[in-house]
Image (cartoon, rainbow, N blue to C red):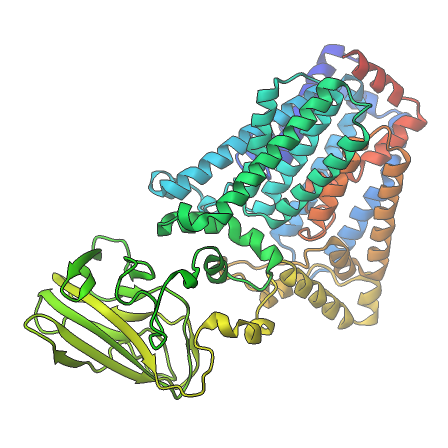
Length: 634
C-alpha cells in the first residue's frame, strides 16, 4: 500500500545516497557511507514500492531510457568478445547497475524530491571537502611528518586532492561552483555575502592547489561565461543576486591579482628552497599549459634563477663560485636520515667568503653539489675543476671530486686530484676529465666526504678547452632539443588516441565491424607503462568514443555518437526545464572525453546523459509541472 511517510524517507535516502555516490570520487571515505545509505534505500524501496512499480506505466518509463540501455548492451557485447575480464570492467558494470537503481527508484519518489535541499546539501558537502583538501595541502607542504605516514599512498602528494585522480577532484569542485552560482541566481537559500565569498575562496584555492590543468582551464572558461551572463542579465537579476555575482567576480579578480603579484616578485618572496619547491609544485602544471614542452627545472629557472642578477667570470662555467651570494646555487645531496648529517655555513676568511662543510655522520653522496644553471658537457672536451680548500678537522684529503654520471661505462666521481699548497692552511685542488659523450644536468663537485670532518671551500671554478664558441648551458640549446620532448598538456592524450586508431586498423574486418572486446586494456598498459605504478595491468585511450570503437566496432561507435547527439538535442529541446543539468553535462563531457574509458567510467557523466530522457518522459506525461509548482511553493 502506498505510504506517504515511507516515500518521504526513501526520498531522503535517495538524495543522500546520490550525493555520497557522486562525491565519493572527490573524497574517498564517502564510498563507505554511500554503501550503507544505498543498501537502506534498496531495502526500503523493495518493501514499500515493488508492487506499485510493476504497473504498466512504469515499464513505459523504463523504455524512455532504452537508448541508454542499448549502450550498455553494446558494452556487454564487448565483454563477450573479450578473452579476459578485469576489475575496470567490473567497476563499470557496477556503475551502470547503481545508476539503473537510482533511475528506477526515482519515478516512485520524484514528487517528494526537494531539489533546493539537494543543492544545499551538495554545497555543504563540497565546501567541507574543499576545506579538508586545503588543510591536507598545508600540512603536507609545511608539516609532512605529522600525517604523511598515516595517509594512503595515493594521498601522499602535496596537492589538495582527496582522491586518486586529482583531475576529477578538481572536476567535482568545478561542478560545485556551477551549483553554487545557480543558487545565487535562483536564491534558493540565502547566504551572507561574507560566507558566499568564503565559500568561493575555498573552491578556487582548492582547485588551484589540486594541480589540475583541466580544472584551471575549466575554471577560466566558467568565469568568462559567468561574466558574459552577468553582463547580459544585469537588468533581469534581482539586486541581491546581481550584487552577489558582482562581489564574487571582484573577489576573484583580487585573488588573481595577488597570485600575479606573487609570481612577479617570487624571487624576493620565496628565498629558501622549501618555499620555492612548494610554490613550484602549484605553478608548474599550470605554466606548462603555455609552455607544453617544459619541465620543473625549466619552470623553476624561469621563476627564480635570473642569472643576470649574478656577476660571474666569463671563463668560469659555474655561478657564485666564491660564495659572494651566500649559498645560492649550492646544496648538499644526502638522505635526511640518522646516518647522514651535513651542515653548511658561510664564513669570512683571508681569501674572502668560504663555505664550511661539516659532516658529522655518513659517507657517500654529495656534501657539496652545484645546483645553478644547467651546464651542457660536450664529448671530447676536457673540463677542469679548480678550488681552494683547507681541512679544519680530518686527515689527508677526506673527499672525492667529480661528476656522478655513467660516461660510456666510466664513472668520473673520484678524479685524480692535483694538490698545491698555497700557505700554511690553504691548498689548491685541480681535477680534469674529458667526456666521451654529451651530457646535461650532471650532479657534480664534492662527494663522499668522510664522517667527522670539517672542510672550508672557496673560489670554485669550472673551465673547459672548447674553442668552437658553442653554447655552454642546457637552456641555450633548448630549441634544438625541443622536438625530442613531450607535450605535457595534450601530448599524452594525442599519442593514446593515435594508438587506438592503430589498433583498430590492425583488426580483422569482422572485428572492425563488431569490435574486439576489452583486450585493448592490456595492450595499452604494455604500451604506456606507469613508472609510479609498475603493477598496473590496464590502461585505455582516455576517450569513450575510441574505446567504443575498439570494444564494439564501427556499429558500437556509430550508435554511441548517435546517442550523444540525441542527448545534446534533448538537452537543448527541453532546456528551460533542466538548464543547470545541461551546463553540468557540458562540463562533464569535457572531462570525460579526455579521461574516461567507456560511457560508464564516470558515474556523473552517465547519469547526466539520462536526465534529458527523463525530462522528456515527465513533459510528455504532464508530470513536470507538478514538480515546478512544488519547487515554487518551497
